[in-house]
Image 1 (cartoon, one colour):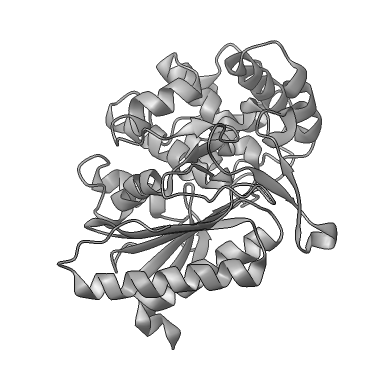
Image 2 (cartoon, helix red, strand yellow):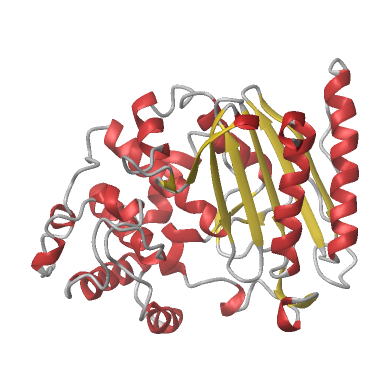
Length: 364
C-alpha cells in the first residue's frame, strides 16, 4: 500500500511508482514479513509505502497507517526534547550531572560530565551490567521514574567504566538523560516527550513498547541471522526492552509521524527548534570528521547530500528502522522492517535504493 500523491505533481507520481517497485523488490528478495518506507522533503512527506503482512503466516496486509518500532532512532527525539527544555530556559547543555541528581551520592569523577556528554555517548558510561538491570526491571513493581533514578544511582555511584569525552555508544547514556529530563520537568519521560515534542508536532500515533492492536508484530531473526524466525506477540514482556529503556529507544509510530520530526532537520527547526538547537543536535565534537552528535551519527560532506548526512538505525532485535537525513539537500529517507536479521539488511538496502532514486547523483 502507498500513500496518495497529488496528480498535479507528475514527476513525484512517476518517482512514487518507481519507489513502490523498489519496495516490492526488496520485500521479495529479503523474505521479511513486511517493509515500510517514507521520503521527506522540506515541503513534507512526498511518498510513503508499506507492503507485506503484519505477521509471518498471519495474512493481514500492512497499511500506510501502521505503527513501526523505531528502536534507537528515538534517541534523536529524546535529545530534541532536551533542546526544547533548553529553549524554555529550564535546562543547559553544559549542565553537569551533579545539577540533575543532587540527592544522589555521585562519584567525584562525574563532576565534569555534562548533559551534552551523555547524549554524545562521551560520558564514560557503558552498558555492562545493564542486562541484569533489564531483567530486574521487567519484574519490578516500581514506576519507571523510580527505576531510572535507581539506575542513575547505581551508574553514577561508581567511577566511569570508560574514559570521559571519548565516544562509547551505550543506551545507559540516554536512560540517564531521560532521568535528568524527569528531574527538570517533574514528569516521567513518557509524559514529558508527549508534552514537549510529540503532541506539539501532531505525532499522535506515537506510543511506547511494541505496537499493539491492528499493527505489525516483531519477528526474531532466523538461525544464524538468516531468514525470519517466530513472530512475538506484543503483549508478551519480551516483545520489547523494558520500559526503563524508554529514552534510549522504545517509541513506535507511523512513518508519517516520524516524518513530522525528521522534517525539522530539513527546515532549520521550522520555528519549533531554534537554529542554535539544530546546530547543537547535529554537530559532532570539534575536530571529529565523522562522529556522533546528539541522537545522530554525522558524516561530513557527501556530494550527493550537498553537505553532511545524519544517520541512525534502531532495533530491539525484533524490528529494524533506518533514518537518513541530508539537511542541505532537503531530503530524508526512512525505512522499517518488522524483523531483525534479514529485516536489517532489507531496511538498509531499501534506504539506499530510495536515496539513489530521489537523489540520482548519489549513484556515481
